[in-house]
Figure (tube, helix red, strand yellow):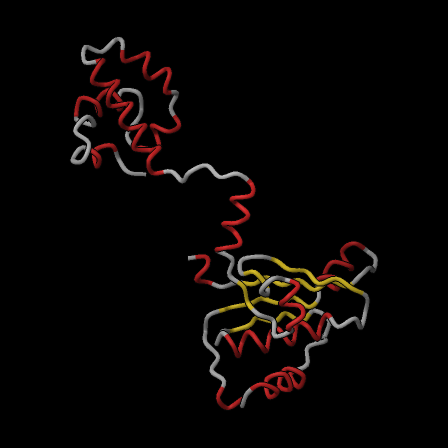
Length: 207
């Protein structure tokens, strides 16, 4: 947070006297001001000879903070904003991308759950090859069940383009764990429905 001194040039009420008053109460930055009891702070101004000006400074600092914050949003507005700003990675499976309304959301975890041989690994392999080709990014694939098939990935790649023309970048676009169940089941001491977890990581999203 900005120190109060940085505000003086644009806001004359945040002058040295105001900062000295704030400093006497342990307030040196905007963050300090936010976590302070403003009612108690205003009560202390009554003991200061320049109380009117200090009260004006408190009001101005509070108005500065309010002007910088985002407007309040209700649940529907938050949902609409999330949909507008949603960034997705296409899996290459048109029907799955349609059901997911654009693909796998970056920065989110997507889990595929189903019985053995229901196609979970095939979806993973298809998504891995499609993301690597379409987005020129790296896909990290953790194979905990010994089911990874380089041959199958090559088939997916050659279906849509010449492998010699594919450029794979260094940016990690997706992390696939195939499968979570084989990691968790030994810990829990039992079996269950197989799960495959995606962590879609677009590093630019986290910057």
